[in-house]
Length: 113
Image (cartoon, rainbow, N blue to C red; front, side, top):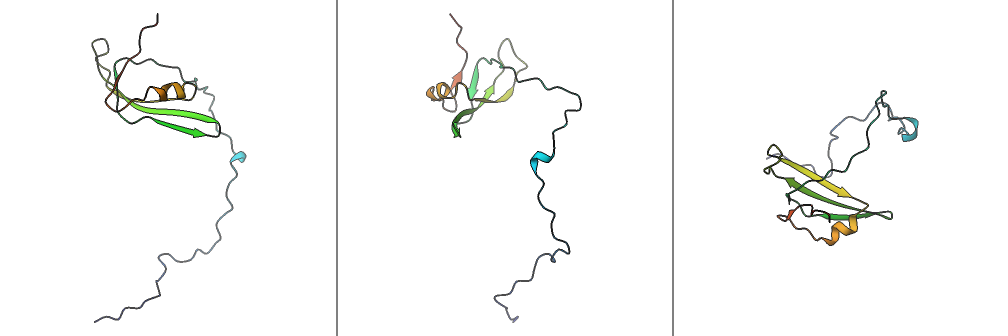
């Protein structure tokens, strides 16, 4: 029977010959835009959607953010639509949280009066 040696484990990798470089500072680099300007996100209204995930409300340094996964199902006017939407807001987070949405709820935009 083979003898088992306890307390010793051989290294998985050999020790490096050179020391690692110091970490790079984030302010040393700038994101290149390649001459292309990005457009700010535009708000989009979806009708007749189903809540897929449990909404979450997160607080970070005096900012509140609400997130929810929503399924945009096809309907009579948008038959090609079949998509998962990740909805999030920080400006209306508390109002969205008060709706207490649950997975399976059908949500739609009510007409304005």
